[in-house]
Image (cartoon, rainbow, N blue to C red; front, side):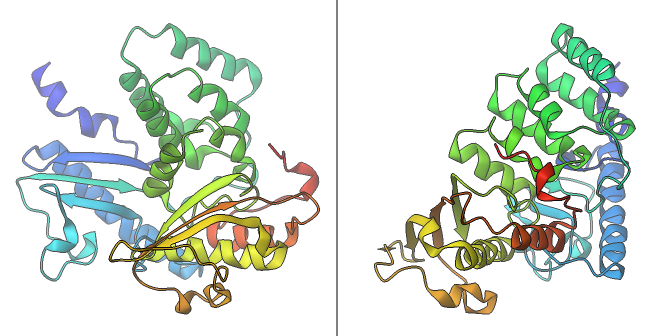
Length: 319
């Protein structure tokens, strides 16, 4: 039993659905093996993405599936000469933490679980005698066998009360969702602004930007982080196409802490990525009427940055 506990990370590791948060003790050979596999998988996925000419929406602009890396509770980049995990030689001691977000998307012909199978899954989760966290881990370990739609993910997250558990579940199953264009259906479960920001921080602000339904959403972009600058640029381009009046309650917090309420309006130059500052935080609320909605641009942006196929507007479930 003692050895089983030490090997738990490796036994539950799902290489077919690696997206999730990892806290690895590098002194443990099983955890070290997981770290090695994820580093190798990261390089392979990035090579495939580059060959398919997918947009680079990684956290620091250096193509990588790994985000928010900490070694010994210090940013990995604090080590001299290290920009990504590819530059880091894994030591055999210390704790390594990071988020992994796969580039792999559901195939075009993927189908969600049928009603009977999904109902049985829900019943099993509700009757489970183990902890909520163990339920989520068990669910992830078999998640590569099936896909979900947005309504089903909303139903599963509704079983758990704790926001942390819901967040882990959503991240673990995000890339098993076949209709990400309807993501607002399950995003509504995260009504708290901070919960939504944490999700984007773990998954990626640009890759998981709410392209199809950004309405009634409060955004916060840290301009020191490349993918957040890209996400802000996406939002400004969208507002310029739909209506700049859709940008509301905005303010720019400069690096020194001073607050600029942008009384002259949001700079039009921000529609160009190179014109965005590289420090400071931009906070904004986006609202858009159905009449102003530019479906064609939203579709094009989701296909470009998220690499997802988007159906005709009639199939979008506006929430």
